[in-house]
Structures are given as C-alpha cells and as structure tokens.
Image (cartoon, rainbow, N blue to C red; front, side, top):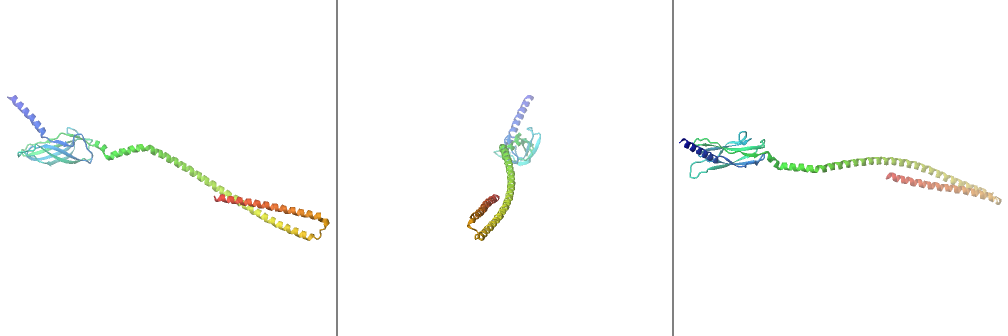
Length: 292
C-alpha cells in the first residue's frame, strides 16, 4: 500500500514540475546569442503563466553566469504587469508583455538576461517563476558600429596612402633643395653682374676721360693748323714780290715742305677723328650693356 502511494506521489510531483515548467516565464525577444550595442533600445518580450487572481510584478536582471548566481545589475524590479484571472469560461493560459530597455555603458562583454514573475495570489500561494537565462553579447556589437567601420576604412586608406605621402615628402624636399641652389646661383649671378657693371662704369669713365683728352688734342691741332695756314699765307704774300725766277727751286722746295706738313697734320687729324669715333662707339656699347 505504501509503495502505491509512493508511486502516486512521484507521478504527481513529475507532472507538477512539467506543469510548472509550462506555465513559467519565457523570454521571446531578444533571442539567445543576440548582439546588442550600447545605447540600443531593446524590446524585451516575454510570456508568463496565468496563475489565477492576484497582482503580478516582474524583475528583469542581468547576470555574469548562466546559473544566475552572480548578479551584474537589475534592469528593473517590481514592474507591474497584467494580472491573471481564474474566473470565466475562457481563460488565457499564458500572458505576455514588453519592456523597453536602453543598453547602458559599463556592461561585461557577455551577460545573461532573466525575467522573474512574482504573482501575489488571492490563494496566498507564493510563486516566483524565473525564466531560463539567455546569453547576450555586448562588446562584439561595437565592431559593427558605422563609426568604427569608417575608422577602419580610414586606417586602411591611410596605410594605402602613406607610401604616396612619403614620395610626396621626398619630392618636396628635393624641390626645396633645387630652389635653394637656384637662389644661391641667382645671388652669385646678381653679385657678379653688379661687379661687372661697376667695372664697366669705371672703364666708361676712363674712356670718357681719354675722349676728352683726345678732343683737347684735336682742338689744339686745329688751332696749330690754322696758325700754320695763317703763317704760310703771310709768308707767301710777303715774300712773293722778292721771289725771282732764279729762286723757283727754293720756292718749290718750300711749298713741298709746307704741303707735306699740311698733309701730315691732315692725316693725324683724320686718325684722331677715327679714334674718337671708335671710342664713342665703344662708350655707347658699354652704356647699353650697363643698361641691360
């Protein structure tokens, strides 16, 4: 008899556990192994059993382990939900509701979410129906953020462009060196041109002095030539009456001598004029060079 009652009690306990499991809390969303990100608004959808008349509240919690022993934080506690009902011809066996949760910062990479239903029944029966923990991943979602994707793209582009930047830097350095050399050559050339200009000015000044001296010499020769012509004319006119036919040879010799002197003076004058023209042309060329 005792064995029969033991079997009955065992079967009752077995079916009671199955019934309790069927009417327990179950998380429908998010799904297990979901990835969530900081700042996301997560809709936690869950169902709980209709245990009869009374007030119902739920606790939503995060845990570090799947045994739900090491608490991370309570998302919410004593959240009022729809109450059950045991009266009427048609009863809902399961009830469901949704809680909106904003994912905070500072969570571990992996957490376990549970929802615990706590009905306070009129029958004074105390029940706590906790759901099975579902695993959620936090930090893994950060790599899927658009900002980080853009950062990775920018990093990749930077790595791709870095050789070009190095080549650009090398070309810029080479261009600066060439510019420095060109500027040095320009300075040297400018200094050389200035020195050459000074030298040409000095040479032109000396040439002008020579031209002035030659001009004075030409003027002196012209005066001397005029004086000789005047003396020649005076001597010829004063002595023409005293010249006899017997002195033709002496007169001819005198005329030849005067003619030679005059021609020599004329040649010297022409030579001086040509030298003056050459010097004047040289001075003009030097002036043009200096202006250039």
